[in-house]
Length: 141
Length: 375
Figure 1: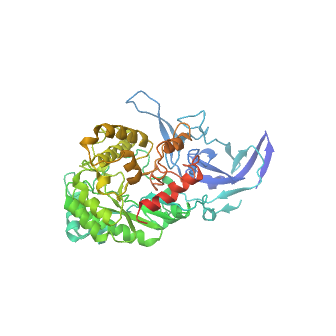
Figure 2: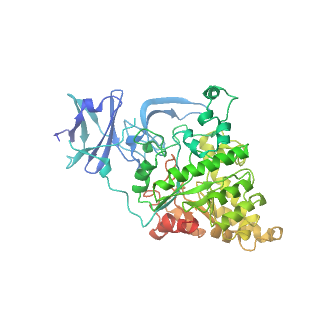
Figure 3: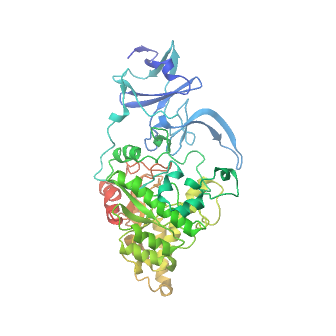
């Protein structure tokens, strides 16, 4: 586990860029907290793996766009490929901010800064982790 | 970095016994039913050796299985339950055992048909043939695969004589714990159903209601006024069907005539129970002479003979209020835990009842179902 400290956040190398290439996902556990990481067409996102509703794992959810709030009878599509839905009830979360679409102020899965740096995927954490590991999961997306 | 396998994950919080009153098995392929269907039925359905793929593309061609008019536009089956082979959630008994029964420490999982009934289909004999084949498939493929699986058997509500025949054919089997009747456009209290109730009571099998006909059948119960425009609206209206049916059962005297018969409404919610009890009790005091066979307060009958699945649990604005509501009408013995696995609107057993006291949780998770199914 490689960590570097600076800018209040701790940078952790999770895996190589090849292991999280476009369309792929990774699940990492940091001191008991599961963080889901997704690469959508080169765009990297990281958020907490558990839906705040009933604790279901977000890593199995689909990446989608969203129907924006509209006038009755109108359908306005947006947020293409920026939303992750809970695989159970389908709650929608903006992957960049982690905020839910139906109640952004109060309901969120949080988000973490994640970047590709020199061929490695780097996750930024608030604290230096004691225990960090990748978690296997049934990858169906 | 080390990789931890999910298989070594510990199971969820232990409960003192868990009976799940709603688990759904799915066919991977309609052809799985072929060995269980009589030849004449296969011929009518153009399956097996009678398959005519040419007809499949034609609109006015061959047999089509009743299709749901409403479907969740996002996903109907929870996406974290796709099988390891990439198959339909709920289609693999081995994976369901691991993903549901083991994970939540189930004592029993009661299977209610998932791939659909033909309970309100216009051709009753074909429906009866499919129903028998479907029941046999479910027993063979699922119930025999794990001792924790039990099932409700489907019958044909449009043809009580054929329903009674089916109950007499397999109702004695130990893996069958209830009868999946289906709501059609004949209120449940009517004499039409009484032959079925008589046999059900004789076999000590409860009548179970679970949505299917509401969305698929020609004889569907009128969709609470008229057709909804969206799935969101339709799904919400389902609770109204159970309310309407309970009123019929009470006023027709079904609970007087069949005092030992239970009616388990699964997936219709329960928070509407107070208003149904209060309204019926008030009316009975004034209108009792029109229904003189109703000899005590309707709410007493309901408490004794009706059971309600908790899923999809209503989420009160203040989480504790739903517990107060249950106490308000003394419904502690009426509620049955149901996961509804693998549907999108299921409840997770360790998260949906956070504010419930332990003794109430144990009733909901275990005791009530033990007394309300032939277990």
